[in-house]
Amino acid sequence: MAEDKPLKSAYELTMERLRKRDEDAGLEHRPLTDKQKAAITEIRTFYQAKIAGQEVLKQSQLRKTFDPAERETLEAEFRSDRERLVAERDAKIEKIRSGEPD
Image (cartoon, rainbow, N blue to C red; front, side):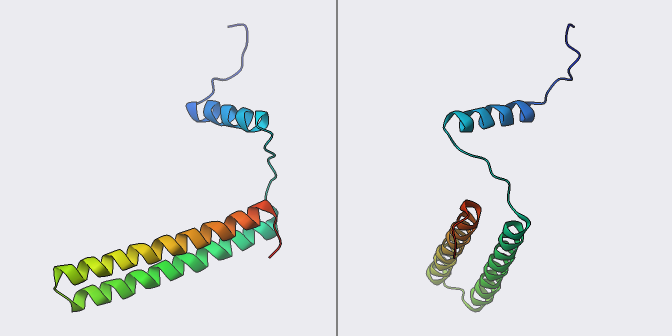
C-alpha cells in the first residue's frame, strides 16, 4: 500500500459525497450556535410533551368506547393532530436553523 490512510466506513464515504453534492449545489453549511441548539431542544421537548399528552388523551378515550367505527375515528383524529404537531415543530426548527428572526 502506497498510502497509509485508514479505510473509511460506508457512513464516512456517504457523508463526504453528500457534503460534495451540497457544495456543488451552492449550499452553505453553518454550524448552529449554542442559542440555536437550546431553542431547538426547547421546541423538541415542548412538542414531545404535547404529543405524549395527545397519546394519553387518546388512550383514555379508546378505553371508554368499544365501537370500532368510533375507535377508528379517534385514531384518525389522533394521527391528524400528531401530523399537525410534527409539521409545526419541524417548521419552527427549520426557521431557527435558517436564522430567521421570530
